[in-house]
Length: 227
Length: 296
Image 1: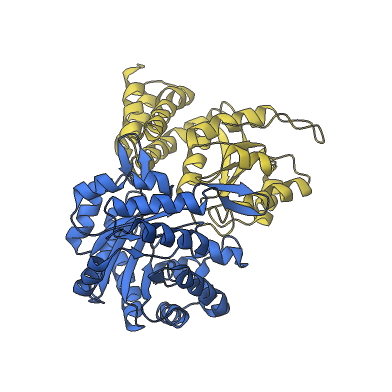
Image 2: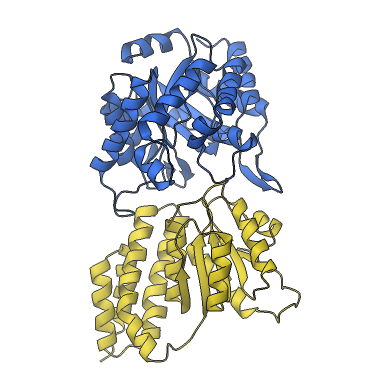
């Protein structure tokens, strides 16, 4: 018997960063007959979106945001087999993500990877200190739609420029999205990245827009996504 | 220099610290994204030149090039440098570069390892790493230990405890951002209570560096003063970083920066200097502004 209160409680468990409760509620929701997609769209995504809003409002800090993402991940682990068994329901796109060479910052990139996966993207997280060559090789191997590169330092963000150039040079179809604390829309524009997002929640909608706007090879690229 | 000696020195007048080191080394050719620690060995003359330039510009204190030289950070960066050797080398370089009377602070930055729930490090691990680095800095003859850019109060306290073990005076500075409810670190540690906790842990002077511009940092003086009675430290960036074709530039002028530093001293800060993007030119302007104000 479906119980719509479960999804509201699941949203709250993600917001509270309660890993065990989020996994348990996801299980209960599945058993009650909710579809995996409903659980993601009406429980998990609203919860993590609200956590992102509280971060922007200065109410949440990194520990809260990270525990919310961990709760989301725990619930996703429960829902994922059902999603896959049901043919996935949707494939939003294939993504290769990592933090650029010389930069060991993990958190922002991992949040974006988690949220993209929760929103139906097939995500290959390459970790930190990823070279442009590695990004290109993985994007080619996976026939990726999108390459996402994070940089947390003003000294490593210049690697994003190298990456955009390498992806273009390799003639890949993948669009390039950049992010990280020092990264601004102006920087994204300057290095001719296809998109930029200010935070993990915004990154999902930018990624969706970029994948939807996929041009024919060699076609002029559409206006790049900004925040 | 122990706590009493630092206290006597600060009673005689404010201390002007140095400015950015990493950004100066990048300007001298350090590859972007590379930790500056390796240059103590590979390009000692370039590191010494920055120390010399700050002393010539009027700095009363320079920081050794050891921000990334805790054993944990060295390991994470894949460095070949040994903690003890590189800290020793960096202090000797600074000492040889500046005239007698200019203090050499052994610089200690965050380990980069994160405590739960964000990471899996333990406070004991961090404290042990800081103790190893602080002991090396002290043995090499650093005048005091300067802990900078801390974003997690638990890690900052571990660093202060470790630094206190050397018997040298300890400066402890964290990095705060302006949020809707005041100034916080990215981990959510609030300004006033954090400074109080560092002072309680035994830091001789406490304060803030990096993240914000000098005009914003000037507004942190009053809440900091209300929170603690010990001497305060402030080291802002040279404005906001902006990405340009050949790298990153900062948008503040030395004159505006110097005005804000003088205002911070007038508001009760006792140790002021610069962080990312500041150069000897900024310090020279600050020296002139502080001296002209005739601050006690």
